[in-house]
Image 1 (tube, rainbow, N blue to C red):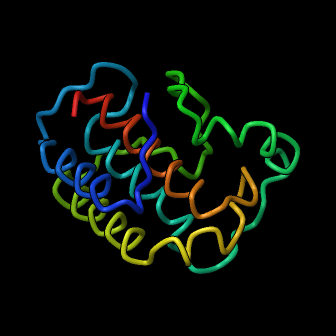
Image 2: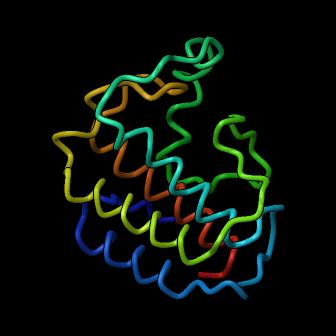
Length: 151
């Protein structure tokens, strides 16, 4: 699996195009979230690098984060059913078009802010990431979920 960097224009445009292919009727091939929940979850993830402020570090992340960090951006695909932090879980019903627009806005903000802003503050679980690691991990996360819906 080739890992792309979301700061790369071609990778950014490809992700946007794949998101645009999603519809409220998109069926999942694995997982528990419906398509609206998935796009809401992905948008919420971007709150981390887009926040512009440091977020509190998780205790468990201080211990396990450095050990698990390389899996974020390695070429090895993520396994299905990995644990998700409670504040990133989306269990309620969501309005698809609203959530899709929010995700596209978050991705655009991340891309346009550029690598200079990414990596300014540590990830709450994984700790310090370089801008390259941020770009690759954010691409890999979205790719993981888009594949969940064959996009």
